[in-house]
Image (cartoon, rainbow, N blue to C red; front, side, top):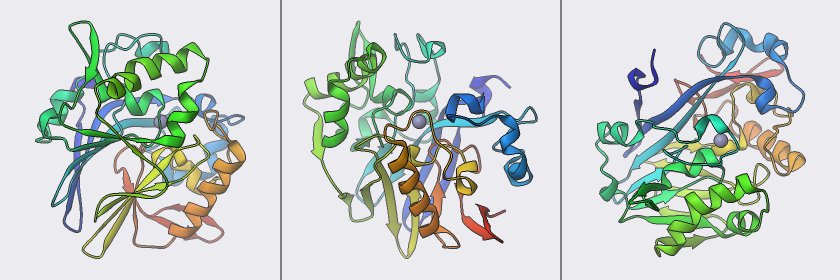
Length: 292
Ligand SMILES: [Zn+2]
């Protein structure tokens, strides 16, 4: 299946909130890319519930990169803006100069860029901030002209002075143009976008990383961000992620989150989880896994 023909929009309802997953990319990925010391065979004890949706027949992880489009009574909100098009000098060279179909698919989910009120990126990595900007007349400009972009202060403090050129490519292409356009609203700690959507600090993957809590009409869901990248981490929260800035804190945050939400009604919306994307965590004997 070519990238352009993938089913790219998936819808959910949490109480009165309408939510759509809008895909930017879905790629099979080697465990080596994500975890410090894990190989394909380390997935064997969990293949029974990870295949076919989260691990392919060659035991590669299926990692989705998508936006969550949230429609509350009051606001249109985007959580995470994926890879973007035409970026250069990225840490993953295969994404340089990319031409994806994200804006077309956002339109298919009935979202015009002008209609977005808030944009929030769970953290400032390249696969979460890309579509915050687009190239227009040779300049990086905000893709969502009427939106307030919510920037976590701690996250920006960390990334603004990172000397690595690949980090600076993200800062200069995806972040600085928003600041220069005067569209940033600076946030810190737990922060409510409105009465149904709250940002909650979950540090470890990055210093200012936040998950997003959705509560409406007695129902609850959480957007994970990269606190947990692949569903295998529900069973193996202690696996170290290459990209975690503080690996010990990331493990602590992830373990706590999984324990807190195990056998609950909370819908877990994985920022990189392939379809079904929204899952419930359950215990089975000593193990934790996804409810099927
Ligand atoms: Zn990510």
